[in-house]
Length: 254
Length: 370
Image (cartoon, one colour):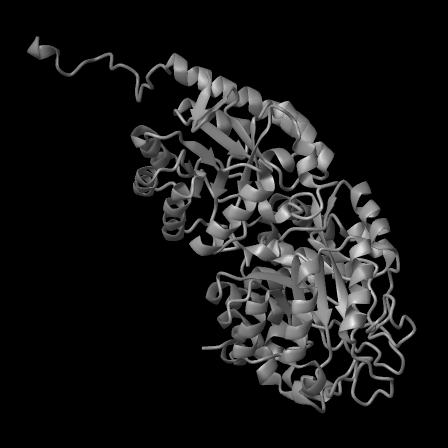
Protein backbone atom coordinates (compact mmCIF):
# COMPACT_ATOMS: atom_id res chain seq x y z
CA UNK A 1 0.00 0.00 0.00
CA UNK A 2 2.86 2.38 0.69
CA UNK A 3 4.05 4.98 -1.78
CA UNK A 4 7.65 5.97 -2.36
CA UNK A 5 8.53 9.42 -3.67
CA UNK A 6 12.20 10.36 -3.69
CA UNK A 7 13.53 9.61 -0.20
CA UNK A 8 10.16 9.39 1.58
CA UNK A 9 7.69 6.59 2.07
CA UNK A 10 4.04 7.43 2.60
CA UNK A 11 1.39 5.20 4.12
CA UNK A 12 -1.31 7.63 3.04
CA UNK A 13 -1.90 8.41 -0.61
CA UNK A 14 -3.96 11.44 0.21
CA UNK A 15 -2.07 14.72 0.06
CA UNK A 16 -3.76 17.83 1.35
CA UNK A 17 -3.56 21.62 1.34
CA UNK A 18 -3.85 24.30 3.97
CA UNK A 19 -5.84 27.06 2.26
CA UNK A 20 -9.45 28.18 2.61
CA UNK A 21 -10.11 26.77 6.09
CA UNK A 22 -12.17 28.84 8.51
CA UNK A 23 -9.47 28.58 11.15
CA UNK A 24 -6.00 27.18 11.56
CA UNK A 25 -7.11 24.78 14.27
CA UNK A 26 -9.87 23.36 12.07
CA UNK A 27 -7.31 22.94 9.32
CA UNK A 28 -5.11 20.98 11.70
CA UNK A 29 -7.96 18.77 12.85
CA UNK A 30 -9.12 18.08 9.30
CA UNK A 31 -5.65 17.18 8.10
CA UNK A 32 -5.17 14.84 11.03
CA UNK A 33 -8.53 13.18 10.32
CA UNK A 34 -7.57 12.72 6.68
CA UNK A 35 -4.45 10.79 7.66
CA UNK A 36 -2.48 12.86 5.17
CA UNK A 37 1.29 12.74 5.49
CA UNK A 38 2.18 15.36 2.90
CA UNK A 39 0.69 18.81 3.28
CA UNK A 40 1.29 21.66 0.91
CA UNK A 41 1.76 25.18 2.26
CA UNK A 42 1.87 28.39 0.23
CA UNK A 43 5.07 30.26 0.91
CA UNK A 44 3.10 33.51 0.66
CA UNK A 45 0.99 32.53 3.67
CA UNK A 46 3.98 31.74 5.88
CA UNK A 47 5.45 34.39 8.10
CA UNK A 48 9.15 34.35 7.36
CA UNK A 49 10.01 36.56 10.29
CA UNK A 50 7.78 35.64 13.22
CA UNK A 51 7.32 31.99 13.91
CA UNK A 52 4.65 32.14 16.59
CA UNK A 53 0.98 31.85 15.73
CA UNK A 54 1.99 31.01 12.21
CA UNK A 55 0.21 28.49 10.01
CA UNK A 56 3.22 26.19 10.44
CA UNK A 57 2.77 25.84 14.17
CA UNK A 58 -0.44 23.89 13.49
CA UNK A 59 1.40 21.41 11.32
CA UNK A 60 3.99 20.27 13.82
CA UNK A 61 3.12 16.59 13.86
CA UNK A 62 5.55 13.74 13.31
CA UNK A 63 3.42 12.24 10.59
CA UNK A 64 3.09 15.44 8.59
CA UNK A 65 5.68 16.35 5.99
CA UNK A 66 5.58 19.83 4.55
CA UNK A 67 5.42 20.50 0.84
CA UNK A 68 6.05 24.21 0.28
CA UNK A 69 4.47 25.57 -2.89
CA UNK A 70 5.33 28.54 -5.05
CA UNK A 71 1.79 29.80 -5.55
CA UNK A 72 1.89 33.44 -6.66
CA UNK A 73 4.92 33.31 -8.89
CA UNK A 74 4.46 34.00 -12.57
CA UNK A 75 7.61 32.68 -14.20
CA UNK A 76 10.58 30.36 -13.76
CA UNK A 77 12.85 33.02 -12.37
CA UNK A 78 10.43 33.96 -9.59
CA UNK A 79 9.75 30.30 -8.89
CA UNK A 80 13.41 29.43 -8.46
CA UNK A 81 13.90 32.33 -6.10
CA UNK A 82 10.79 31.45 -4.08
CA UNK A 83 11.91 27.81 -3.91
CA UNK A 84 15.18 28.81 -2.34
CA UNK A 85 13.41 30.98 0.21
CA UNK A 86 11.01 28.12 0.98
CA UNK A 87 13.84 25.63 1.46
CA UNK A 88 15.43 27.99 3.93
CA UNK A 89 12.25 28.89 5.80
CA UNK A 90 10.54 25.51 5.91
CA UNK A 91 13.69 23.43 6.14
CA UNK A 92 12.82 21.01 3.38
CA UNK A 93 14.05 20.54 -0.16
CA UNK A 94 10.64 19.27 -1.27
CA UNK A 95 8.75 21.62 -3.49
CA UNK A 96 5.40 21.77 -5.20
CA UNK A 97 6.32 23.82 -8.24
CA UNK A 98 3.36 25.86 -9.38
CA UNK A 99 3.69 28.67 -11.85
CA UNK A 100 0.42 30.23 -12.86
CA UNK A 101 0.70 33.56 -14.62
CA UNK A 102 -3.09 33.50 -15.01
CA UNK A 103 -4.62 34.50 -11.67
CA UNK A 104 -8.19 33.88 -12.85
CA UNK A 105 -8.10 30.14 -13.52
CA UNK A 106 -4.63 29.55 -12.09
CA UNK A 107 -3.63 27.58 -15.16
CA UNK A 108 -0.06 26.34 -14.93
CA UNK A 109 2.46 27.62 -17.46
CA UNK A 110 4.03 24.56 -19.10
CA UNK A 111 7.02 26.35 -20.58
CA UNK A 112 8.10 28.14 -17.42
CA UNK A 113 7.40 25.04 -15.33
CA UNK A 114 9.69 22.84 -17.41
CA UNK A 115 12.40 25.48 -17.33
CA UNK A 116 12.16 25.92 -13.57
CA UNK A 117 11.93 22.19 -12.89
CA UNK A 118 15.14 21.48 -14.74
CA UNK A 119 16.99 24.16 -12.80
CA UNK A 120 15.52 23.21 -9.43
CA UNK A 121 16.44 19.54 -9.84
CA UNK A 122 20.01 20.66 -10.46
CA UNK A 123 19.82 22.72 -7.29
CA UNK A 124 18.94 19.60 -5.32
CA UNK A 125 15.19 20.03 -4.91
CA UNK A 126 12.66 17.21 -4.85
CA UNK A 127 10.36 18.75 -7.44
CA UNK A 128 6.66 17.93 -7.77
CA UNK A 129 5.32 20.12 -10.58
CA UNK A 130 1.66 21.13 -10.88
CA UNK A 131 0.75 20.98 -14.54
CA UNK A 132 -2.01 20.54 -17.01
CA UNK A 133 -2.89 16.94 -17.84
CA UNK A 134 -0.45 16.93 -20.74
CA UNK A 135 1.18 13.54 -21.32
CA UNK A 136 4.11 14.90 -23.33
CA UNK A 137 4.89 17.54 -20.74
CA UNK A 138 4.86 14.84 -18.07
CA UNK A 139 7.45 12.87 -19.98
CA UNK A 140 9.59 15.94 -20.50
CA UNK A 141 9.44 16.71 -16.78
CA UNK A 142 10.32 13.13 -15.98
CA UNK A 143 13.38 13.46 -18.22
CA UNK A 144 14.65 16.50 -16.34
CA UNK A 145 14.38 14.61 -13.09
CA UNK A 146 11.21 15.57 -11.24
CA UNK A 147 10.21 13.18 -8.48
CA UNK A 148 6.51 13.02 -9.37
CA UNK A 149 4.10 14.77 -11.69
CA UNK A 150 0.91 16.49 -10.54
CA UNK A 151 -1.53 16.85 -13.42
CA UNK A 152 -4.83 18.59 -12.81
CA UNK A 153 -8.22 16.89 -12.89
CA UNK A 154 -10.01 20.17 -13.62
CA UNK A 155 -9.35 23.84 -12.84
CA UNK A 156 -8.02 24.37 -9.35
CA UNK A 157 -10.73 24.98 -6.76
CA UNK A 158 -13.49 24.13 -9.23
CA UNK A 159 -14.61 20.85 -7.62
CA UNK A 160 -15.52 19.66 -11.11
CA UNK A 161 -13.84 16.28 -10.81
CA UNK A 162 -11.79 14.45 -13.42
CA UNK A 163 -12.53 16.43 -16.55
CA UNK A 164 -9.14 15.47 -17.98
CA UNK A 165 -9.71 11.76 -17.43
CA UNK A 166 -8.68 10.60 -20.92
CA UNK A 167 -5.33 12.37 -20.62
CA UNK A 168 -4.79 11.25 -17.04
CA UNK A 169 -5.14 7.66 -18.26
CA UNK A 170 -2.37 8.20 -20.79
CA UNK A 171 -0.15 9.89 -18.20
CA UNK A 172 -0.66 7.07 -15.70
CA UNK A 173 0.07 4.49 -18.38
CA UNK A 174 3.27 6.16 -19.51
CA UNK A 175 4.76 7.63 -16.38
CA UNK A 176 7.86 6.26 -14.68
CA UNK A 177 7.46 8.63 -11.73
CA UNK A 178 4.47 8.73 -9.38
CA UNK A 179 1.40 10.51 -10.70
CA UNK A 180 -0.47 12.67 -8.21
CA UNK A 181 -3.80 13.96 -9.46
CA UNK A 182 -4.03 17.51 -8.20
CA UNK A 183 -6.75 20.15 -8.47
CA UNK A 184 -10.42 19.87 -9.20
CA UNK A 185 -11.18 16.82 -7.10
CA UNK A 186 -14.52 17.83 -5.64
CA UNK A 187 -15.83 14.69 -3.98
CA UNK A 188 -14.46 11.51 -2.42
CA UNK A 189 -15.89 9.63 -5.42
CA UNK A 190 -13.59 11.65 -7.71
CA UNK A 191 -10.62 10.71 -5.55
CA UNK A 192 -11.66 7.05 -5.52
CA UNK A 193 -12.01 7.14 -9.30
CA UNK A 194 -8.53 8.60 -9.76
CA UNK A 195 -7.08 5.94 -7.48
CA UNK A 196 -8.96 3.12 -9.25
CA UNK A 197 -7.42 4.34 -12.51
CA UNK A 198 -3.99 3.87 -10.99
CA UNK A 199 -3.02 7.34 -9.86
CA UNK A 200 -0.39 7.02 -7.16
CA UNK A 201 -1.93 9.70 -4.97
CA UNK A 202 -4.32 12.63 -5.04
CA UNK A 203 -4.05 16.12 -3.61
CA UNK A 204 -7.23 17.62 -2.18
CA UNK A 205 -7.77 21.01 -0.58
CA UNK A 206 -10.91 23.00 -1.46
CA UNK A 207 -13.29 20.04 -1.25
CA UNK A 208 -12.23 19.45 2.35
CA UNK A 209 -11.72 23.04 3.50
CA UNK A 210 -14.96 24.46 2.13
CA UNK A 211 -17.28 21.60 3.12
CA UNK A 212 -19.70 22.15 5.99
CA UNK A 213 -17.75 19.70 8.10
CA UNK A 214 -14.10 19.65 7.02
CA UNK A 215 -13.04 17.09 9.64
CA UNK A 216 -15.62 14.55 8.51
CA UNK A 217 -14.84 15.31 4.89
CA UNK A 218 -11.15 14.73 5.56
CA UNK A 219 -12.04 11.31 6.89
CA UNK A 220 -14.33 10.63 3.91
CA UNK A 221 -11.44 11.35 1.53
CA UNK A 222 -9.16 9.10 3.52
CA UNK A 223 -11.55 6.18 3.06
CA UNK A 224 -12.18 7.00 -0.59
CA UNK A 225 -8.48 7.06 -1.41
CA UNK A 226 -7.91 3.80 0.45
CA UNK A 227 -10.88 2.15 -1.27
CA UNK A 228 -9.77 3.37 -4.68
CA UNK A 229 -6.25 2.09 -4.16
CA UNK A 230 -7.45 -1.28 -2.91
CA UNK A 231 -9.70 -1.60 -5.94
CA UNK A 232 -6.82 -0.76 -8.25
CA UNK A 233 -4.61 -3.36 -6.63
CA UNK A 234 -7.41 -5.95 -6.70
CA UNK A 235 -7.86 -5.23 -10.42
CA UNK A 236 -11.29 -4.11 -11.52
CA UNK A 237 -13.37 -6.60 -13.44
CA UNK A 238 -13.45 -5.56 -17.10
CA UNK A 239 -16.28 -3.32 -18.13
CA UNK A 240 -18.70 -4.84 -20.65
CA UNK A 241 -19.83 -2.39 -23.24
CA UNK A 242 -22.92 -4.49 -24.03
CA UNK A 243 -24.56 -7.70 -23.01
CA UNK A 244 -23.24 -10.82 -24.74
CA UNK A 245 -25.39 -11.23 -27.80
CA UNK A 246 -27.88 -14.06 -27.50
CA UNK A 247 -28.06 -14.54 -31.24
CA UNK A 248 -24.45 -14.69 -32.38
CA UNK A 249 -23.77 -13.63 -35.93
CA UNK A 250 -20.84 -15.91 -36.66
CA UNK A 251 -22.06 -19.38 -35.66
CA UNK A 252 -22.32 -20.34 -39.33
CA UNK A 253 -18.53 -20.42 -39.40
CA UNK A 254 -18.33 -23.17 -36.83
CA UNK B 1 -8.44 49.57 -28.98
CA UNK B 2 -8.19 50.87 -25.42
CA UNK B 3 -11.07 50.98 -23.00
CA UNK B 4 -12.05 54.54 -23.81
CA UNK B 5 -12.96 53.38 -27.30
CA UNK B 6 -14.94 50.44 -25.93
CA UNK B 7 -16.65 52.82 -23.56
CA UNK B 8 -17.62 55.17 -26.38
CA UNK B 9 -19.62 52.42 -28.05
CA UNK B 10 -22.18 52.73 -25.25
CA UNK B 11 -24.37 55.57 -24.15
CA UNK B 12 -25.38 56.19 -20.58
CA UNK B 13 -29.09 56.50 -21.32
CA UNK B 14 -29.31 53.34 -23.41
CA UNK B 15 -27.57 51.31 -20.74
CA UNK B 16 -29.78 52.81 -18.08
CA UNK B 17 -32.91 51.97 -20.00
CA UNK B 18 -31.86 48.41 -20.69
CA UNK B 19 -31.07 47.81 -17.00
CA UNK B 20 -34.43 49.15 -15.87
CA UNK B 21 -36.26 47.07 -18.46
CA UNK B 22 -34.92 43.77 -17.13
CA UNK B 23 -37.67 41.43 -15.97
CA UNK B 24 -37.90 38.79 -13.23
CA UNK B 25 -37.46 36.19 -16.02
CA UNK B 26 -34.14 37.79 -16.94
CA UNK B 27 -33.05 37.57 -13.32
CA UNK B 28 -34.07 33.92 -13.04
CA UNK B 29 -32.19 33.12 -16.23
CA UNK B 30 -29.07 34.80 -14.86
CA UNK B 31 -29.34 32.95 -11.57
CA UNK B 32 -29.94 29.55 -13.14
CA UNK B 33 -27.22 29.77 -15.75
CA UNK B 34 -24.63 27.05 -15.34
CA UNK B 35 -21.75 28.72 -17.16
CA UNK B 36 -20.24 32.18 -16.96
CA UNK B 37 -22.67 35.06 -16.68
CA UNK B 38 -22.41 37.79 -19.28
CA UNK B 39 -23.01 41.52 -19.11
CA UNK B 40 -26.71 41.12 -19.87
CA UNK B 41 -26.97 38.81 -16.86
CA UNK B 42 -25.16 41.41 -14.79
CA UNK B 43 -27.66 44.05 -15.87
CA UNK B 44 -30.49 41.79 -14.74
CA UNK B 45 -28.80 41.13 -11.39
CA UNK B 46 -28.41 44.83 -10.60
CA UNK B 47 -31.83 45.77 -11.97
CA UNK B 48 -34.81 46.74 -9.82
CA UNK B 49 -36.38 43.45 -10.94
CA UNK B 50 -33.74 41.53 -8.96
CA UNK B 51 -34.61 43.07 -5.63
CA UNK B 52 -37.18 40.30 -5.09
CA UNK B 53 -34.42 37.70 -5.51
CA UNK B 54 -32.02 39.05 -2.93
CA UNK B 55 -31.94 35.94 -0.77
CA UNK B 56 -31.32 33.64 -3.76
CA UNK B 57 -28.57 35.97 -4.95
CA UNK B 58 -26.99 36.03 -1.50
CA UNK B 59 -27.01 32.23 -1.23
CA UNK B 60 -25.39 31.84 -4.62
CA UNK B 61 -22.85 34.58 -3.96
CA UNK B 62 -21.97 32.97 -0.63
CA UNK B 63 -21.36 29.57 -2.24
CA UNK B 64 -19.34 30.90 -5.16
CA UNK B 65 -17.17 33.01 -2.89
CA UNK B 66 -16.43 30.15 -0.53
CA UNK B 67 -15.53 27.88 -3.42
CA UNK B 68 -12.98 30.31 -4.77
CA UNK B 69 -11.70 32.11 -1.67
CA UNK B 70 -12.54 29.65 1.08
CA UNK B 71 -13.69 30.74 4.50
CA UNK B 72 -11.20 33.57 4.72
CA UNK B 73 -11.18 37.35 4.77
CA UNK B 74 -8.04 39.25 3.80
CA UNK B 75 -7.15 42.10 6.19
CA UNK B 76 -5.62 45.38 4.99
CA UNK B 77 -5.22 48.89 6.31
CA UNK B 78 -4.81 52.30 4.66
CA UNK B 79 -1.87 54.55 5.46
CA UNK B 80 -2.56 58.14 4.44
CA UNK B 81 0.71 59.83 3.55
CA UNK B 82 -0.53 63.25 2.50
CA UNK B 83 -3.63 65.38 2.10
CA UNK B 84 -2.02 67.78 -0.34
CA UNK B 85 -3.99 67.91 -3.55
CA UNK B 86 -4.17 70.11 -6.65
CA UNK B 87 -7.56 68.77 -7.71
CA UNK B 88 -10.97 70.12 -6.95
CA UNK B 89 -13.35 67.24 -6.34
CA UNK B 90 -16.81 68.13 -5.09
CA UNK B 91 -17.07 65.12 -2.80
CA UNK B 92 -13.60 64.97 -1.20
CA UNK B 93 -12.30 66.42 2.05
CA UNK B 94 -8.86 66.93 0.55
CA UNK B 95 -10.19 69.02 -2.34
CA UNK B 96 -7.87 71.90 -3.30
CA UNK B 97 -10.52 74.51 -2.44
CA UNK B 98 -11.15 73.04 1.00
CA UNK B 99 -9.35 75.25 3.51
CA UNK B 100 -7.60 72.67 5.66
CA UNK B 101 -4.07 72.50 6.94
CA UNK B 102 -2.02 70.50 4.44
CA UNK B 103 0.29 67.81 5.66
CA UNK B 104 2.70 65.34 4.09
CA UNK B 105 4.34 62.84 6.40
CA UNK B 106 8.11 62.86 6.76
CA UNK B 107 10.07 59.62 6.80
CA UNK B 108 10.27 59.71 10.56
CA UNK B 109 6.53 60.25 10.87
CA UNK B 110 5.82 57.43 8.44
CA UNK B 111 7.85 55.05 10.56
CA UNK B 112 5.89 56.11 13.65
CA UNK B 113 2.63 55.35 11.85
CA UNK B 114 4.03 52.06 10.55
CA UNK B 115 4.90 51.01 14.09
CA UNK B 116 1.24 51.38 15.06
CA UNK B 117 0.04 49.36 12.07
CA UNK B 118 2.54 46.62 12.88
CA UNK B 119 1.29 46.44 16.46
CA UNK B 120 -2.21 46.02 15.04
CA UNK B 121 -0.89 42.97 13.15
CA UNK B 122 -1.00 44.25 9.59
CA UNK B 123 1.07 42.77 6.78
CA UNK B 124 -0.85 44.31 3.85
CA UNK B 125 -0.86 48.08 3.62
CA UNK B 126 -2.52 50.55 1.25
CA UNK B 127 -0.68 53.85 0.78
CA UNK B 128 -2.93 56.82 0.01
CA UNK B 129 -2.08 60.32 -1.21
CA UNK B 130 -3.78 63.18 -2.98
CA UNK B 131 -2.49 64.48 -6.31
CA UNK B 132 0.35 66.92 -5.81
CA UNK B 133 3.23 66.12 -8.10
CA UNK B 134 5.69 68.50 -6.46
CA UNK B 135 5.39 66.92 -3.02
CA UNK B 136 3.98 63.44 -3.49
CA UNK B 137 5.09 62.48 -6.97
CA UNK B 138 6.84 59.30 -8.04
CA UNK B 139 10.20 60.09 -6.34
CA UNK B 140 8.43 60.59 -2.99
CA UNK B 141 6.56 57.30 -3.40
CA UNK B 142 9.74 55.47 -4.34
CA UNK B 143 11.35 56.76 -1.18
CA UNK B 144 8.37 55.73 0.95
CA UNK B 145 8.16 52.26 -0.55
CA UNK B 146 11.84 51.63 0.10
CA UNK B 147 11.36 52.89 3.63
CA UNK B 148 8.42 50.69 4.56
CA UNK B 149 9.14 47.59 2.45
CA UNK B 150 10.88 45.76 5.28
CA UNK B 151 7.72 45.97 7.40
CA UNK B 152 5.01 44.72 5.04
CA UNK B 153 4.41 41.64 2.90
CA UNK B 154 2.29 43.51 0.41
CA UNK B 155 2.13 47.17 -0.55
CA UNK B 156 -0.76 48.68 -2.51
CA UNK B 157 -1.22 52.29 -3.52
CA UNK B 158 -4.15 54.59 -4.11
CA UNK B 159 -2.71 57.70 -5.72
CA UNK B 160 -3.15 59.87 -8.79
CA UNK B 161 -3.10 58.13 -12.18
CA UNK B 162 0.39 57.83 -13.64
CA UNK B 163 1.99 57.12 -16.98
CA UNK B 164 2.95 53.58 -17.87
CA UNK B 165 6.68 54.13 -17.33
CA UNK B 166 6.00 55.58 -13.89
CA UNK B 167 3.95 52.53 -12.98
CA UNK B 168 6.80 50.35 -14.21
CA UNK B 169 9.12 52.14 -11.79
CA UNK B 170 6.76 51.56 -8.87
CA UNK B 171 6.15 47.90 -9.79
CA UNK B 172 9.91 47.40 -9.80
CA UNK B 173 10.06 49.00 -6.34
CA UNK B 174 7.62 46.36 -5.11
CA UNK B 175 4.13 47.81 -5.45
CA UNK B 176 1.72 44.89 -5.71
CA UNK B 177 -1.59 46.58 -6.39
CA UNK B 178 -2.84 49.93 -7.63
CA UNK B 179 -6.33 51.20 -6.94
CA UNK B 180 -7.73 53.77 -9.31
CA UNK B 181 -11.41 54.45 -9.00
CA UNK B 182 -13.15 56.01 -11.93
CA UNK B 183 -15.51 57.84 -9.50
CA UNK B 184 -18.13 57.96 -12.26
CA UNK B 185 -18.37 56.81 -15.85
CA UNK B 186 -20.83 59.62 -16.59
CA UNK B 187 -18.52 61.70 -18.75
CA UNK B 188 -20.36 65.03 -18.51
CA UNK B 189 -21.00 64.84 -14.80
CA UNK B 190 -17.45 63.66 -14.21
CA UNK B 191 -16.38 67.08 -15.45
CA UNK B 192 -18.77 68.81 -13.04
CA UNK B 193 -17.38 66.86 -10.11
CA UNK B 194 -13.77 67.48 -11.15
CA UNK B 195 -13.69 71.08 -12.35
CA UNK B 196 -9.98 71.70 -11.77
CA UNK B 197 -6.70 69.84 -11.71
CA UNK B 198 -5.27 66.93 -13.69
CA UNK B 199 -8.09 64.76 -12.47
CA UNK B 200 -10.52 66.67 -14.67
CA UNK B 201 -9.15 64.70 -17.64
CA UNK B 202 -11.77 61.93 -17.92
CA UNK B 203 -10.06 60.16 -20.77
CA UNK B 204 -6.69 59.90 -19.02
CA UNK B 205 -8.37 58.48 -15.94
CA UNK B 206 -10.47 55.89 -17.75
CA UNK B 207 -7.38 54.70 -19.64
CA UNK B 208 -5.40 54.26 -16.42
CA UNK B 209 -6.13 50.54 -15.97
CA UNK B 210 -4.86 49.98 -19.51
CA UNK B 211 -1.58 51.64 -18.57
CA UNK B 212 -1.41 49.59 -15.40
CA UNK B 213 -2.02 46.37 -17.27
CA UNK B 214 0.67 47.26 -19.78
CA UNK B 215 3.05 47.97 -16.87
CA UNK B 216 2.50 44.40 -15.61
CA UNK B 217 0.87 45.21 -12.31
CA UNK B 218 -0.08 42.20 -10.18
CA UNK B 219 -3.43 43.56 -9.10
CA UNK B 220 -5.60 46.53 -9.88
CA UNK B 221 -8.60 47.91 -8.10
CA UNK B 222 -11.63 49.34 -9.87
CA UNK B 223 -14.76 51.05 -8.66
CA UNK B 224 -16.95 54.12 -8.65
CA UNK B 225 -17.95 56.47 -5.89
CA UNK B 226 -21.52 55.46 -5.23
CA UNK B 227 -23.82 58.42 -4.80
CA UNK B 228 -22.48 60.62 -7.58
CA UNK B 229 -24.71 59.10 -10.24
CA UNK B 230 -27.14 56.24 -10.76
CA UNK B 231 -25.10 53.42 -9.24
CA UNK B 232 -26.66 50.80 -11.50
CA UNK B 233 -25.29 52.41 -14.64
CA UNK B 234 -21.95 53.25 -13.10
CA UNK B 235 -21.53 49.68 -11.87
CA UNK B 236 -22.46 48.27 -15.26
CA UNK B 237 -19.57 50.26 -16.71
CA UNK B 238 -17.32 48.95 -13.97
CA UNK B 239 -18.30 45.41 -14.94
CA UNK B 240 -17.73 46.20 -18.61
CA UNK B 241 -14.31 47.58 -17.71
CA UNK B 242 -13.48 44.51 -15.64
CA UNK B 243 -14.37 42.07 -18.39
CA UNK B 244 -12.38 44.07 -20.94
CA UNK B 245 -9.33 44.17 -18.67
CA UNK B 246 -9.48 40.50 -17.70
CA UNK B 247 -9.29 39.46 -21.33
CA UNK B 248 -6.54 41.84 -22.23
CA UNK B 249 -4.33 41.84 -19.13
CA UNK B 250 -4.85 38.21 -18.22
CA UNK B 251 -1.91 38.08 -15.83
CA UNK B 252 -3.39 40.63 -13.43
CA UNK B 253 -5.80 40.10 -10.57
CA UNK B 254 -8.72 42.47 -10.13
CA UNK B 255 -10.54 43.85 -7.16
CA UNK B 256 -13.62 46.02 -6.91
CA UNK B 257 -14.66 48.44 -4.19
CA UNK B 258 -18.05 50.08 -3.78
CA UNK B 259 -17.53 53.11 -1.54
CA UNK B 260 -20.72 54.97 -0.72
CA UNK B 261 -20.35 58.73 -0.47
CA UNK B 262 -19.72 59.64 3.15
CA UNK B 263 -20.16 63.05 4.72
CA UNK B 264 -17.17 65.30 5.38
CA UNK B 265 -17.02 68.88 6.49
CA UNK B 266 -18.60 71.11 3.85
CA UNK B 267 -19.13 68.23 1.49
CA UNK B 268 -21.50 67.01 -1.14
CA UNK B 269 -24.76 65.26 -0.37
CA UNK B 270 -25.26 62.07 -2.40
CA UNK B 271 -27.25 62.73 -5.56
CA UNK B 272 -28.49 59.16 -5.61
CA UNK B 273 -28.83 57.29 -2.33
CA UNK B 274 -28.02 53.60 -2.24
CA UNK B 275 -29.75 51.55 0.45
CA UNK B 276 -28.14 48.69 2.34
CA UNK B 277 -30.35 46.27 0.42
CA UNK B 278 -29.08 47.70 -2.84
CA UNK B 279 -25.46 47.46 -1.77
CA UNK B 280 -25.97 43.80 -0.89
CA UNK B 281 -27.60 43.33 -4.28
CA UNK B 282 -24.59 44.91 -5.97
CA UNK B 283 -22.03 42.85 -4.07
CA UNK B 284 -23.86 39.62 -4.89
CA UNK B 285 -24.27 40.68 -8.51
CA UNK B 286 -20.54 41.29 -8.89
CA UNK B 287 -19.78 37.89 -7.41
CA UNK B 288 -22.30 36.00 -9.53
CA UNK B 289 -20.99 37.83 -12.60
CA UNK B 290 -17.32 37.19 -11.80
CA UNK B 291 -16.35 34.35 -9.52
CA UNK B 292 -12.70 35.35 -9.31
CA UNK B 293 -12.83 39.10 -8.68
CA UNK B 294 -11.85 40.27 -5.21
CA UNK B 295 -14.44 42.40 -3.44
CA UNK B 296 -13.38 44.79 -0.75
CA UNK B 297 -15.26 46.61 2.00
CA UNK B 298 -13.88 49.54 3.96
CA UNK B 299 -14.71 51.16 7.28
CA UNK B 300 -17.01 53.60 5.49
CA UNK B 301 -19.75 51.10 6.21
CA UNK B 302 -21.28 50.72 9.64
CA UNK B 303 -20.78 47.90 12.12
CA UNK B 304 -24.02 46.02 11.55
CA UNK B 305 -23.61 46.09 7.80
CA UNK B 306 -19.99 44.98 7.96
CA UNK B 307 -20.69 42.17 10.37
CA UNK B 308 -23.37 40.76 8.11
CA UNK B 309 -21.61 41.23 4.80
CA UNK B 310 -18.74 38.88 5.66
CA UNK B 311 -20.53 35.83 4.31
CA UNK B 312 -22.13 37.45 1.31
CA UNK B 313 -19.32 37.72 -1.18
CA UNK B 314 -16.62 40.08 -0.03
CA UNK B 315 -13.03 38.90 0.25
CA UNK B 316 -11.15 41.68 2.00
CA UNK B 317 -11.77 44.16 4.79
CA UNK B 318 -9.96 47.06 6.39
CA UNK B 319 -10.24 47.76 10.11
CA UNK B 320 -9.05 50.37 12.55
CA UNK B 321 -8.52 52.73 9.62
CA UNK B 322 -7.67 56.41 9.80
CA UNK B 323 -8.21 58.57 6.73
CA UNK B 324 -5.98 61.49 7.65
CA UNK B 325 -2.20 61.72 7.28
CA UNK B 326 -0.71 61.01 10.69
CA UNK B 327 -4.07 59.74 11.90
CA UNK B 328 -2.71 56.75 13.80
CA UNK B 329 -0.27 58.58 16.05
CA UNK B 330 1.48 61.59 14.51
CA UNK B 331 -1.47 63.96 14.21
CA UNK B 332 -4.66 62.15 15.19
CA UNK B 333 -6.75 65.34 15.20
CA UNK B 334 -6.11 66.44 11.60
CA UNK B 335 -9.02 66.51 9.17
CA UNK B 336 -10.09 63.16 7.72
CA UNK B 337 -10.79 62.54 4.05
CA UNK B 338 -14.13 61.08 5.08
CA UNK B 339 -15.74 59.91 8.30
CA UNK B 340 -15.21 56.35 9.41
CA UNK B 341 -18.38 54.47 10.36
CA UNK B 342 -16.85 51.41 11.93
CA UNK B 343 -14.25 52.46 14.50
CA UNK B 344 -13.62 49.05 16.03
CA UNK B 345 -10.05 47.83 16.34
CA UNK B 346 -8.54 45.29 13.94
CA UNK B 347 -8.58 42.72 16.75
CA UNK B 348 -12.28 43.32 17.38
CA UNK B 349 -13.00 42.90 13.67
CA UNK B 350 -10.87 39.75 13.58
CA UNK B 351 -13.01 38.33 16.39
CA UNK B 352 -16.19 39.17 14.49
CA UNK B 353 -14.81 37.42 11.41
CA UNK B 354 -13.89 34.36 13.45
CA UNK B 355 -17.31 34.30 15.10
CA UNK B 356 -18.81 34.05 11.62
CA UNK B 357 -16.72 30.97 10.92
CA UNK B 358 -14.09 32.71 8.83
CA UNK B 359 -10.37 33.13 9.24
CA UNK B 360 -8.93 36.65 9.10
CA UNK B 361 -5.85 36.38 6.88
CA UNK B 362 -3.13 38.89 7.65
CA UNK B 363 -0.53 37.62 5.24
CA UNK B 364 -1.24 36.24 1.80
CA UNK B 365 1.72 37.49 -0.13
CA UNK B 366 5.43 37.83 0.29
CA UNK B 367 7.51 40.60 -1.15
CA UNK B 368 10.10 37.97 -2.04
CA UNK B 369 7.71 36.62 -4.67
CA UNK B 370 8.00 39.80 -6.66
